[in-house]
Length: 496
Image (cartoon, rainbow, N blue to C red):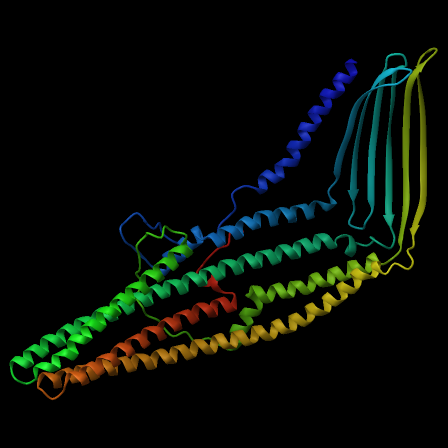
């Protein structure tokens, strides 16, 4: 009975150790995930109004954005999946134990059994197994008996499940999947940065439209004052001032609309930055741009080496090839060499006290499993072969799609710059045309109709200039995303 108590304590200790060992990797995997980073400064957000540069917005987005935070949480589980795959060829230990109390028509007894077993898989498919069985029985009448022994087994597959390429396929698949996951993380961060950039540009656009509306309202008030002066001096009839006063109402309505657009743009950017929607932010960057010349050949070369979607498709081809090799191997016969040895010791009571018997066994042989008429065994290979061909087709399509997207992005960048240049010249001419018409009105050589018409032309030209400039800035961001160069352009580290 003392021995049973000792064994029970030992088993509880082993169980605690095994639980802690098993939980340690999982607890480590659930630690706080990493986050991307970039050079930046601390941004105070406790004031009534916060002026943000584009760098500040991206910095806050990397720190707070929920999509990025969720992607890094996913990486925690994905890295643990890789750790599990890499543990495939490490020794595995299992401790089986049981303790029972029983009674039959002859006796009452208790039995304790402990069986630790370790297994090991080699890179060539060889399976090693070593176990030790220890069983102790304590009976009221039968007394104390003990049976223990060790057993060693080795199994070497020759066809199915044999060969380094087949056995290490899960590990290679895990590493390819890890590369895919890293590319997906890069794509998520890049897409989020692009969304922040375009949202920031929309805030800039709304601010500029608001300024255009306010300037137009100020000029409408100036026109009314000029009309009053001209009416007082007899150069204008009194009824013509109605046109200028009506334009004031129109400009006040335009200011309300731009204020609505400004608030919508502010809220959109705040959501991407995961900030309080009551935070009053203002885009502080000057609305300006410089021309960047990009070679289509160089851009395509960069995209082929960095664009996540294209690289993921290339990895998908490798994954399909591995799956096909494994499926083909599964169709082969199961032929394995088997060898092993065991030794057992029995200790039991006899007439002369306790007696101990020893026995041993060596074994060697071959196992053959030959299936016939089972089409389901070929099903996986057929699907794997079709998938491999499809992935090749998709890669060809991805290559063509990449080339088209890069060419479109480069061409769009050049086109947007040319449109901005035209809009800028048109804006300068419209402003000059309005100034001339104002001078003519002062001397009575023009009318409110011409001035208001040219005023509308100037507002349209200024709006077109702003829109074309924003479109060019956005096309720069889209080109970076198409090339897979967003992180490099903003000096961002994934810290993965």
